[in-house]
Image (cartoon, rainbow, N blue to C red; front, side, top):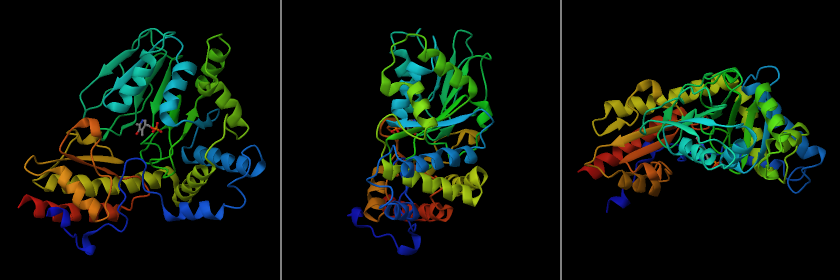
Length: 373
Ligand SMILES: *Cc1c(COP(=O)(O)O)cnc(C)c1O
């Protein structure tokens, strides 16, 4: 049985976690949770110790993203999925325009399209593996697209489009922390901590421009009914006090704070993007040299440095490869379920050591040789 294939230890990554979210958590993060045990876990999120922790997350992210004057970092509960609905209520004045090139971009577009108080959303869409920005329509006041489409492994440019007065709202969920970004080109750059930041799911974070803050204030005062849990005005007010509207997962905040500290101590965004680009050159270089593997994203400039998707020749069952790897401790390199391709998907977030990506490719080669026979 090929499920019994034993991969030699010399070909195995030292850490076998390559999932695109939840993603690898470094041991130092786990240790920080244990160390923070007495003073943070089990204590009130309205009191100084946890508020200082939230403050360190907000300040650490401001430093990491080199945010321009007037920009603010806010946070709330519910993850990026909750943020889509919050944005629908608190950022879109009349109409949103979306660039859709995969599952995550499509989900946000579906959220605004379903809102009875908004004009019908405009959607620019291209097939999986490509990227597109929304068409610039003068009636749209929010332009939204993902920086990195986790379901396909394609990364899009992030730059201002649309009239002044409209907002550029970027889903940075799997990009933030691992792909370069000029925050001044965005009004809202939002993400969740279970990808590049190696924490647990359940939170969302967003970097807001002064124009985005103004829009939030305007819609909060407009008389539109906004469910409190999805009000970015309430999130903003709470965040400014280093709190969240309702109780956050304190352990996840500790994981996140530790990762931000680690990234900033090593050189911040420049260091992180250098690391993910090293990993990506191992992965794509291997795929291009291997006749059984092909990068799914054809255009090299769209290939993501944080989530790599590699198609496997139809004569070899990729599911079989992932099963064997899993039994050898290498996990979560399955493709996005709805993409339905014979594919491997590898997360290369900063926590993943580039040398482990190189070892992973050797392990895959070993398995391919065994199952292709
Ligand atoms: C993971 C992911 C999401 C969903 O994040 P949740 O926190 O699980 O809601 C949204 N967008 C992108 C691009 C993602 O990678």
